[in-house]
Amino acid sequence: MSALGQPRERFRAAAGRALEDRHTQPALDAATGRLRDARLAAWGLLPDVEELRERGREIKQRTIDDLDRYLDEFSRALEARGGHVHFAATAGEAADTIRDICRRGEARLVAKSKSMASEEIRLNEALERDGLRVVETDLGEYILQLAGEHPAHIIAPAIEKTAVEVAALLGAVDGSELRPELEKLTATARRQLRAVFETADVGVTGANFAVAETGSIVLVTNEGNGRLVSALPRTHVVILGMERLVPTTRDLGVLLRLLARSATGQKLTTYTTVLTGPRRPGEQDGPDELHVIVLDNGRSQLRRGRYREMLNCIRCGACLNVCPVYRKSGGDAYGPVYSGPMGAVLVPLLVGLEHAPSLPHASSLCGACAEACPVKIPLHELLLDLRRDLVAERVAPFWERMAFRLWALAWSTPLGYRLSTAAARFGAPLARRLPGPARAWASQRTLPPLARRRFRDRRR
Image (cartoon, rainbow, N blue to C red; front, side, top):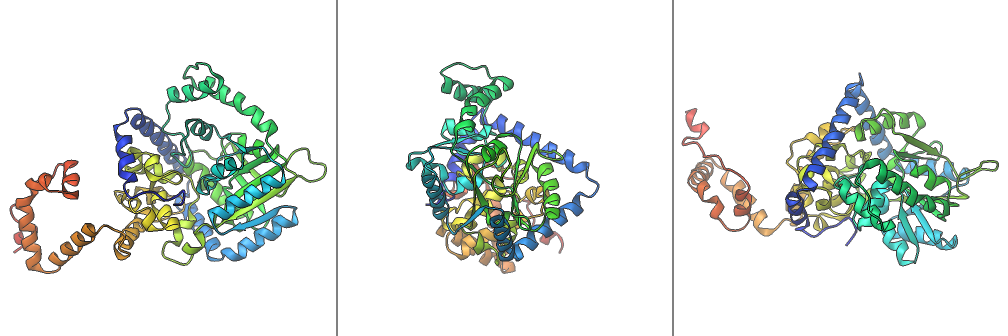
């Protein structure tokens, strides 16, 4: 199974553990609430936020509509500046290409900046099988690597970790006891990672955007590790999801304004780095080699279908921070890579509904995710479409398909509606005693008593 897929019952089991964890719930509430409030404040300072969102949506959609052209333009521009472009149809091809690059360079140590695409292709596992040491240098990712866990949030990967847990993890590296104080923990992580930056043979990053007209890679981070990983090692490898292209630097400016405000509430992220080619003669830093892996891994299949708008996602994490389901279930419930509403849509599309059948149901369909999305992706509508596909493709369990068929049949005639609602009035108090899904559903809800007369009967 792909790194993106998950067993049918994973979501329910993982969400249950998160709900029972007295440390996870306050950490999730505090962190997502802080990010949500920061986004709202930043958007409130923009006089034209809706116009800006519409421009962002238009730029992304225009790029996806003519993606082949922009991929070709980007490749030619980057190679003219000394870079190398590799196209990978699958996650395995992408990981194998990077393994080959590391072998040719006789690499031993790989330093990584935060990259969800690298999680998608299971890069760390692939490189470690070859005997390489791989170190995450983003603070949140480094903490999770020490814990042996995967990111729980697109922007804040260690969002569920408390200061006490972080102190224990960092202290274990040095064999010492640390106080759970932010400045102390940050200084300790910085010291532990300094040697990695200085001695890494290969640096691996993702790419927030890539500019077709210039062949540039754009990194957006709030830590300096992205610049160190891309500048100090002799080889820099970029994993670029093919949908992350933008046509021009002018278009980039629009999306950067949306990304920073939607992700963290900043006008501009602390480090916004534009890289165009490897180090040139006379330059003091930068890699000798720059390799860009253009990752497909199911994306091209989405371009011409009704789910194509999902490729507009700029990975800001805003939908996670407003989602009532994510804020209680946590990131682990969605699997090891993408979480929240965007993950609930994207993962089934990339791996197939049969490998992630629970995710389309991981939503209250309140629409908060679509309201928060900076490029106006109708996430709740896409989730509804995926639920329809679960039935149409017979991925949904037999009892679920049969229940909805019987419901549709009953409510297709006035007589069936009257009989079924009359039965519901008498059967509602017994719902908790029913077997299977009905009991599980009713056990978590207080069911209101049904009125003695239907509304339509009162109108007569």
